[in-house]
Each structure stands twice: as structure tokens, then as C-alpha cells.
Image 1 (spheres, rainbow, N blue to C red):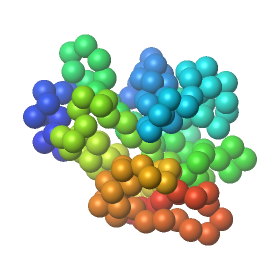
Image 2: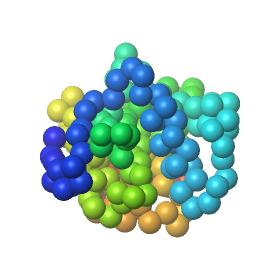
Image 3: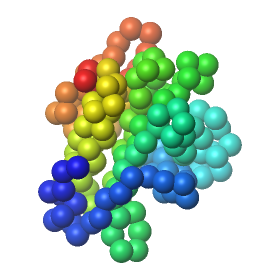
Image 4: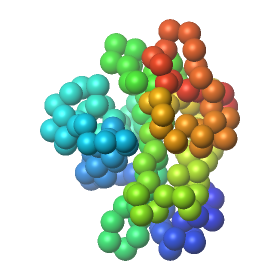
Length: 167
């Protein structure tokens, strides 16, 4: 794993593990409310289309990395493999993991999101995955980061805002 931004910020990175569901819940809520408060924690937990982002299931290939300071998480990236009968917003096909990334507002702009995404992409590549997808709403400035990493619009039958990176 690269460590430039995390080292500058004095962070430790580790793999996501059992017990990190609260991190994923908070990160999912931050991601959903990127431009204004639209959804609550209850929405994330009660709506299946959101809830599947608040957990990782290693048995289906899901994984993630969290960057921590001494007291709390600062950034997190995770990839989930959702089935076609319960697809995510960035779903392309079951064999393409869907990436989510979130960096706390206080740490944005330091390169941590890029570092975490590169870490996850490297892991996906080492596992022989053919690609990684994600979803980004129109107007979200994070799209610039995704494009700079090589993500392109998926097109086809995918939902608007679905982007894919071929590995």
C-alpha cells in the first residue's frame, strides 16, 4: 500500500474487519449526503439499496482499507460484489466489484482519497479482477478524481453516473 498522504497526515492504514460496520455506515451516510443532508442513518439501515454499502462480506470477495488516526477513522475505501438480483448504483456485472470511498471533510484535499483508491485498485488487480466500478452523482466534484484514475462512463444498461475502470 502506498503511504504518501497517510504518512503526511500521521495515519495508520489497515484492512477492514469485523466490527467496522459503524465506519461503513457513517461513510455511506456521508457519501449519500455529499451535497446536502438528504438521508438519515435510519434510511441507510432500512433501505436495501443503501444498506448493502454499510457492510462488507469477505465470503463473496468484499474487502476494504481504513485510514485511522489515534481516535477515529479518517478515510475508508471498500469494494463489494453485489449480485445482479440486488445491484448497487454502480453495478456493472457480478464479477466487477463496486468501489466506495469516503474521506472525512477535515482530511480532504491531501491526496488520501486517491491513495486509498489506488490501494484498493492494486488489491483488485492482484486478485485478478477484470475491473472496478463506482457510482457518482451528477455535479459531484469527486468525479474529477475518478476520471484522473482512469474511470470512464460505463454506458450500456448501467444507471447514470456509473463509471468503470478496466484492470
